[in-house]
Image 1: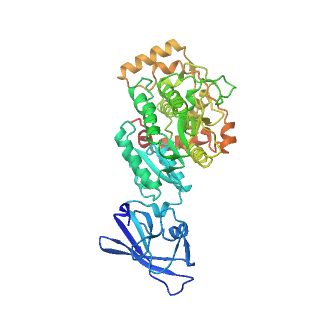
Image 2: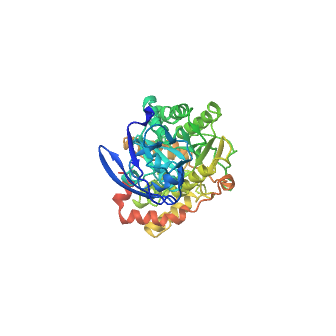
Image 3: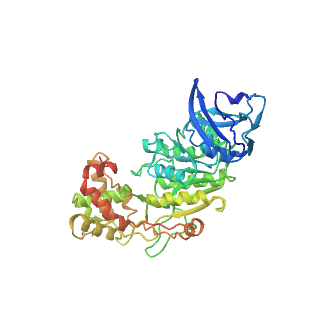
Length: 452
């Protein structure tokens, strides 16, 4: 017996009287105890995949090592075997601590940033789509996902070589070093507009470290979660495509541009896809500029009536379910999407700032919300004073004023062509639900949106 076959658990299959329809009755031996097991097979020769399917009731954490004759001399079939004889009393041996038996037919997918807004539903949807998901994050998954047998929660810090390699060693043991895709969502994000060394350490160097550590995996695809904000904004009436110029105006999109470059140029052999996602919202709100605009109008803040830009401009949003749908489609079409392919993901026609103002005002106060233009120098000065008085806690920062006119309408024809994807949700259709949840429980709504 090979050295790596210990520690083991054995499932002993007793010989059936009916050779064409053998029935096995046995159990899993662990610490001297037998766990009852029953499984049936209607052929004398049993394909390995079929046997694995019929043993799905075995919920022990184990991985398949091989079929061994009762005399222990040699295996009937090893890990790569396709079939085995149902002869007299074969012994099925499993490695402890893994669930390879149940999941051997499921392609492996890593999701980094798995506890985040996109990470949790992405893990759930990928598992439902038939993948074995390895969830990597510094924060543990919620209990609802921990109970999923096809989502493995692994603690991982992308800034720490040793920690990352330890996590990937666990991944390797669960997928035999083969991965269908990596959904790389982990990144640093700060809406203050201030630069931070964490953009370099987490987003840029963390991605590089991850790709280097994966160099000896059989990896079919690497999906990087970027942002539409890497693009230069367009004029009202125009739409941004993936081939349009890049222009990061503040540290967050700048870090995404640099990471995209790193993936393309420093890891050219990786089959990479760059999903440039617009502002993500849910039925609770979440997208920062959106929920802050709602908050100002809900509280009747005098600043809610002033805007230092063209009120006809707007920025694309996208519902979290639509983003997750795009992610799953990207994985499923991994063999058809070329390397280094950027894809814009968002609602093509954004509501204008003025349109949002009026809609939010009507939903909350039953009246259109008046919006008055303020010159940018005045607005910048006011934002600076407000931020200083609040001790740096004000949401509106002076750097935001210069971007008030930025318009992001998206051409999503590439997503439609390569992924068969178009958004099923529209922000204006979801807005009444967002507002109702605010009105039903303001405290909970503020907490969910990080404002308390």
